[in-house]
Length: 412
Image (cartoon, rainbow, N blue to C red):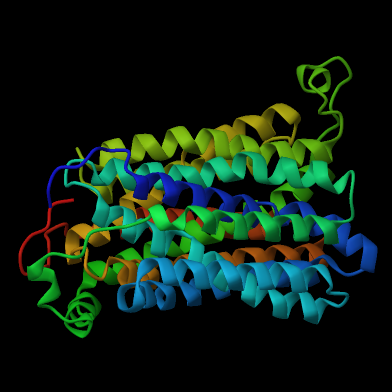
């Protein structure tokens, strides 16, 4: 592949699509209390809807990855955006838990078609060998940028319109990004990669113990991220000590713990932009498996300390910064590792399969959060489970072998 600039039209459009897609997805935790309050549902009902969204996202990711490789990237993205929009519109009219849970299947598939699996594969193919690690990090950081304003904007809109109308605004936003799709053209795979079928590459990966370890390790990432996204605003609203009058937060308009909960999601997004870009830079210089192990270890320590100490506005913000810097830093490293080991031709499908593990963890984290809350009245047990699976992920990445398995080594 010839040398290309870092910022290409493919990268910029890919960042825009991921930014809008993730801004919407990251805001769902803000709807937890308003929807449950309006319909007088147990917390577990809407939690299950978000959990189903995460599971559908995971199931849809390898499907859309394979679809993009068979019928074209842009067609797969258009289909994903249309399904996303349909899920949001139908959700705006839902009045029962079963309806919300059913329609979140469409939202999850929509996120799959407009998210990491498809976009990172396109960005990876369109990047030069020297730029690929950083390009994947920039595209991943765009998801964090969406998270920065997604939850606060949703919180602001909920103050001026019903949650149903907010969903319709989100529908218009995800459809609007399709206007930029003609600019997203990625080069075809290399001749050597085209000579190997999808079945050959998949069989090679499935027989490889390192692929199994990567798959297992990504589970805790999904558990921790989905739990925090779905439940942390409510967690902060109910358990954080009051915001003192005259404090810095109060002076900037954050006077309630519910506003702090929405702000915490944005703070995680801000910190994650820097953390993800740093991970992309580091992934070109050091073994990715050790970087991943360190990230999961850092998350484990941060989560353990946070739950053991008093929950205050300061501890919430400190945790948000620390967790945010480690938030999606795993994505460019994991996707880059998959591309490095098995090539770029079927990166979307292979990363989609690995991402399914991420979303299994996401389903469990969100659903358990709501279920344990309804049983025990707090999130303590499910939080400690997250600490445990994070420690497990730090360990399982250590035996991964980073030797390429493609017929002709493809540097990443």
